[in-house]
Image (cartoon, rainbow, N blue to C red; front, side):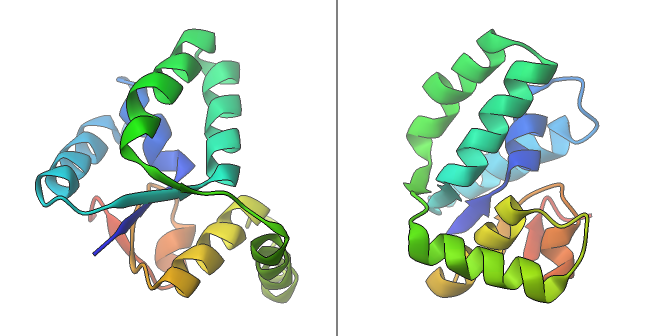
Length: 134
C-alpha cells in the first residue's frame, strides 16, 4: 500500500530541529522497511524546494533533491489533476487550505492512496490516515 509524502514531512525530515523530525524519521523508516512505495506530486516538490531554500538555504534544497527524491515516485501535475485540485479548492472554500493540498488529496483519491506521511492537519481532516500517528 502506497504512502503519499507531503511538504510538511519532507521539511521535518530534513530539518533536525523541527518538532516533528524524530517522529517523521521513524515513520519513514517503518514505511521503507515495509517496502511501501512513496509518492508525491510535482507541486509538493516545488513547494518543498522553495520552503527549504527560503528557510534553511540552498544546500538543504540540494540535499532534498539529491538524497530524498530518488526514493520517491513523482506524479507530475497535468492540467486534469490541476483542474481536480482547483475544483476541490473552490468547493472547500477555506482560506488556509492550499492548492498544493487539494491537488495532493485528489491525486491520493484517484490512486487509492489512504495514508500520508504528513505533519499538516489538513490530511487528517480530509479523511486520510496520517503518519506519524499522533
